[in-house]
Length: 251
Image (tube, rainbow, N blue to C red; front, side, top):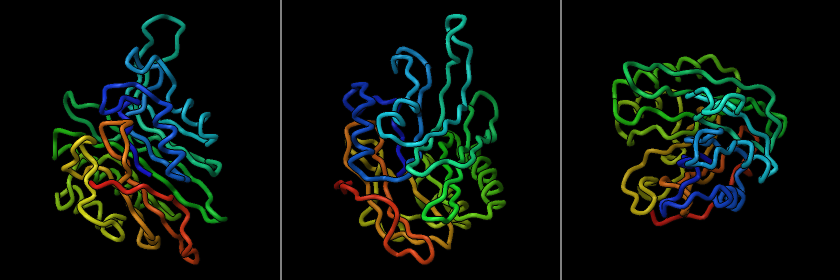
């Protein structure tokens, strides 16, 4: 699953991380790439470590990649961080966060990766959140992501809010290397944003050519301003899928 959680604030303006946890649990997702995750960031999210709280609530393993990392408001308090996270039922064997190209005053973005083993097969999972208001910036970030992914020797899955619609140069570039799960198995336009009246597809699950999509669905939710997208993926030799049971939305 890829899910931009908007620091736990739903389309109704209500902060409710428990609602996010329930949506992930109900989806049955084994691996979740999360974007816009706060860690002791501010009062907007009750200064919570959201990645740790979700992992604890769901009994999943977690890694967190801070892309913004600020001093605390009060000395001795935890650092204020904002970034991406990966939740996994399987133990995370290794991980790293790679900062992506940034120019001027644009927000620092990152590519978080985690190596997990699924049915004795190593899979390298990535999640990212690209710049929302600059196509040249996104193109530079996509180029950096392709460089990282190009060095992988494992099966690859990339999740993320790419802030780009299908058919744009950014998506055309990344799909030279990876397959868009929605084009394989999704039905309809797959719109994910905004949650209340979706009319754009910004959120993706992509994978290497040696992985197959069995199903793909956009899930109904009130938990964020984005709708999550889930895909049931199968590795070579496994055609039962290892992903989710999903609740399709009309979007």
